[in-house]
Length: 436
Image: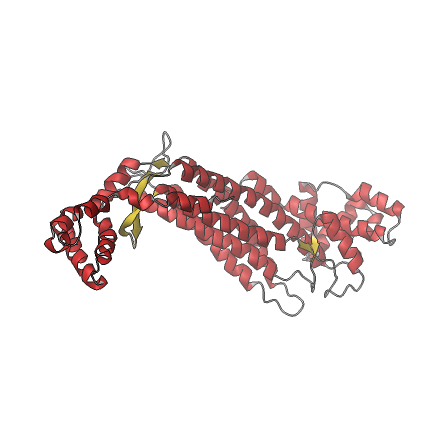
């Protein structure tokens, strides 16, 4: 099923061909390092470059898989397939290495490559959210807490909040990605039995990686856990936005609506249905991304210098989490770009609670006259409850209340019930969000 969500650029990274190509890239970098320190002659190195620097194709993958049926060891199968293809000079390949030297270092290369694509997807989402935020400044809509009308906000501020959160998500993931740019070529338990720190440094330099400061047989999995946890937090943001859009699309609200293409169908039984299917789909996929982060966290506690319990997990979560995150971010962009905004329904919904959202303003005005807060609260609340029950406009009840009327002047009433009051600091907030 994961193929359904794979964009070509991301899917290519996790093909068997590209995986073996990354292994071969690391193996050849080790040979280059041995050549630089004098362990492989220039002549042999030239032959290696000529014979072993090849593009991995399907035939090579099939042969390696065939060999693995016997060896039950993927790296040995890979090396055997290289030996068959390259000939005697292949004796220099894997010199002094253990399997994890190659697999972990190549894994970092693949995760970095995938991470760079995810950063580009973040940038696309941020650009769309910024555009929506700036385009809808001043568009009043009802702010809700617990799902209940609270006080007015603006659609711009809603989108600004998501922009700021995605910006934090990007920063978290960029930091985790940078922490993942490491390689290790330190041998069986990290003590450089045959390899040397000098060789390791050369290899990592050739590959554009940093040296893992202390490795055992593996790169420690706190780095991987941070990477996948950053994706999981991002998935939480994606779901929060999708849940918001799903609620705003409910029939009783209908302040926004997903794009609905010509010929699209919403229900097999009910031709009238236009469902928030994209937001719902992304809500579900976000749960998968978060679940995979738990598996990454479980991978941290390996036995001693290394066991193999993490390997099977990572063969699933490395491609799945990066593919899904990349897909969901791009699908989110398409949803936002095609989103229908309905200002007329926002205005209508604001009137559904009879102006009760002015209650705090009235409370504050009464307190400013010197009335104790709890006494003022009771005065406002009794009118609010009456407004709910009788469906009479709250401002009219407030003005007609003798006790309140005796406390507040006509001049105060005149400015008390203006919805635009709630947006007086909209510009200040947006300036903070887009300070760059």
